[in-house]
Length: 374
Image (cartoon, rainbow, N blue to C red; front, side):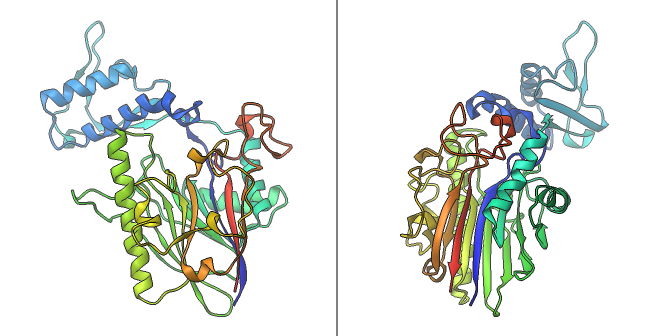
């Protein structure tokens, strides 16, 4: 049986990302994000009532879209048909009466990422040196492939042989993918983008792809890659409930593998909540045999329990959860923070010399890795 390193990393600054997501904190951007989600929800109604139109106009006006198609953080895209009239000197008016009258949506204004940030993202991959790495918040497979083929070699790293990503459900185009070395080929992929909740809506905010990986020697490793519902949209209770439903579905997928006799399984990614939260209880409690790698005796604790931002306990939101057979094979594990700007002045830990400030950081998330030896 082989030795290999497994990792997960939220690549927030690998690609251009919405401008609103680069504000100092979630609270600063939450009103706009809520309006963005609500507008697209209203647009997708089959028919527009007078109350729907009034709410649309209120939200558009609040975001300075009642008189123009672009504002600081939002863009109103109109592809076909007529949606809104803006007569000079008179209030704007929603003229569409139903979804089929027009094609369009609201999207988030992108913000440029510095060259240093993108290069430092590549340096995280080089530093971690994983054989298999889950990638969170990647744009699409083509962009991820370009990053792998061009940026990683540019900073002196070794590009990956297998790069895979299935587009998920996030309207911002942030997905979860997987990159592996040549002797860890991806044998099969199963997407869950169309899994539904009790109300018939798509359950996963992004996806929960199942990756089947062939290990040297013939064994099979199963990876369930995740980016669970964030806390940045809508009401907190609704976000928590959806995240718990997602965690419960991931648990079902995991248990189906265990019932089928599969022993080597890992559930990895950004779960957007902490270990003690009720939302993650289906994965970490409720009789689950999944084990958090950070609880292993061989985990290298640096005194900071979190993986996000300054590494406080409230920032422990990235996980590698292992089945019993994998947990028993852990030789060492740790968080690699060199790509994160720690604290106001970046002095909480050592970072890459090419990071002159927060804009040059690879991500707000540290990479998490584990060495497994059978």
